[in-house]
Length: 293
Image (tube, rainbow, N blue to C red; front, side, top):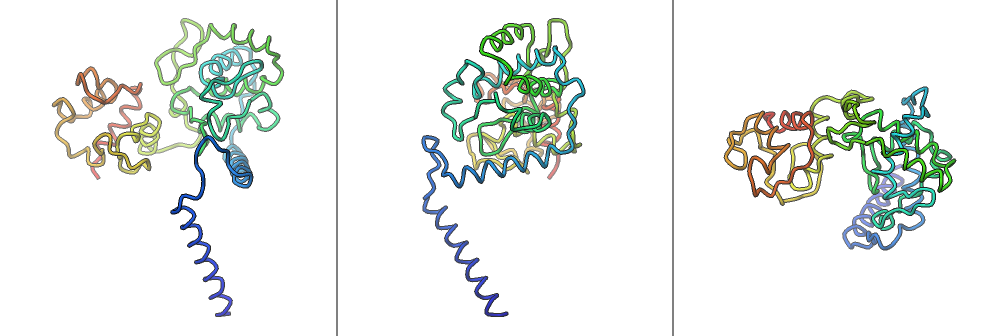
């Protein structure tokens, strides 16, 4: 038994050393001008399908999923946020969609490959290591289901039908992290889906989601949020101990909320851009950043 154990340990150590050498030597081509190898591509696809299926198992689609107004709103969302990467009947994806790797596939056959509940999960949460973004913090739950309803109908649309659906959708506006209403003129804006979570998150987890979804970690290191080792902006890990915000404002909760929403107005000329942060998300971020470590 000792000999067997020693052999297995030696094999494991050799495999780990080979993997470390493979990574360290940069042998895998990560450029988007080449495709993944067949093995890697199939591994990623299979992993994605099983992961989505598992996580979407407890989701229930609305009973009247294909209600005409929901499908029309979904067409507006598709026009604003999806066609650029996925194309449509008679419509090619934009250059950014054509240039991604893995290539975002057309969604005309999505209903054959995915259940509506799975399309909802993918649209809401996105897919790591792909160009598929998470729309949870930007679209309302109604808008997310509207996208599902329209995608589920996409295979039945001819190019002329699709053009007609796009024309009809002009009366609707899909939000995307703005106070704009998602519907005809006169309707009221809805909360984004993270205010109606399928699985309740605590406030810290919601705050970390907001910090990721508003790209704060693109420039700052943030306590508890995994991201790039970036040094563009100052680290926010000790923010609670700071007395002042940029521009000399006292570091209070209300001032920090204002700063997160409109930095240019509070400190003209700052390199901090306005990121379209909603008031709710700004309050979540401020609570998290000002919490003592």
